[in-house]
Structures are given as C-alpha cells and as structure tokens.
Image (cartoon, rainbow, N blue to C red):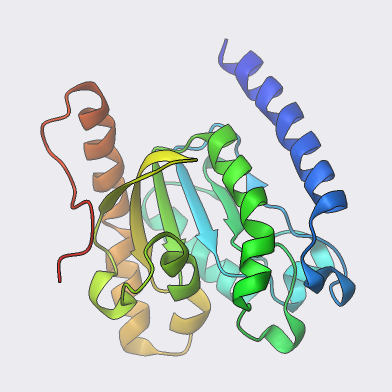
Length: 213
C-alpha cells in the first residue's frame, strides 16, 4: 500500500513539475538555465522550503547542492534523516541573476507551483529556510525573533499547517553564532513533528496561530 501510494504521488508530482515548468510565467525563466522544482520523498512528513536556487542548483536542477546543501545534509544527519526522507524545494523555482533576493512578483508567479506541491505531498510540518520563505507564509514576521519556534496557521488553499522558521543555511555558513543557532534550532524539528502528529489524533496541545506581538 505504501509503495503504491508513493508510486502514484511520484507520477502526479512529475506531471505537476513538467506542467508548471511549461506554464509558469516567472520572468526569471529567461535568465535561468532551468527550473529547479524540488527533490526528495513524495511521502515526506517534513517539507523544507528555501528562497530560490543558486548557481549550482541552476546548473544541476536540484535544490541545495552547493556548500549550503552540504550543511543542510549535515543537519539532516543530526536528527537521523537524509535528503531521501524529506522533500526540499524553494519559493521561487528559478535562479535570480547574481543570486539576488527574489522580487515579490517573481515569488507570486511561482507560488501556485509551491501550493500544488504542498497539497500533493501533504507534509506534517513545513520548515522555512530564510526570511523570504518565512514571510511568504507569515508576512511581517521577524526571523530573528521567530527562528526555531513552531507556528500553526490556517490557509484557504493549503489548509492548516504547522511551520518552523529557520535561518537559511547559506546565511549561517560563515557566521559562527548563526550557524550554532541554526544547528540548535534544527534539533527541535523532530519534537515539533512528534507533537503535531500526536495533535492530529488528539488535538489538545496547540502552537500559536500567529506570532505574538
């Protein structure tokens, strides 16, 4: 049964990524080498959402394959996981020129793609990497105050989801303090996953609906 579900979802996800790559109106298509849809398990309980592909990702068509990707894989191992156990994608599916921050209209053009991925994979927890990914779901939230904390929020299209905002691995690579903070925050993710799964069966404990001001 498990294999049948995985096979079905993989087929649907491949078709979704093919269709979106053809139809996505993001202007970054003109300068990018290719789309970078995502990588990992379609049965993942944890979905990691970054900001946008970088140079290596643009060339290989896979998210987080450079130095930041190696750091991310190191943190996966710290909680007993690998890339094959999770799903990794980005808000924006095409590399911005010179690795600049994605513009609001570029994010808006790629959001339907991400939305369909979330609905199909249906993760238990969504981990956002970096402020752009976090602010898509929580506008105005400050990552310096929210990192490592779980939040629960209802959306009209993707339903009610639990999120854990984290610093982006690339930002933490050469910042010793941020690197240690990110590694520490990462260790909290399994507990959030465990609590969320328990709450799905017996919803007594809840995470904040919005960030307390």
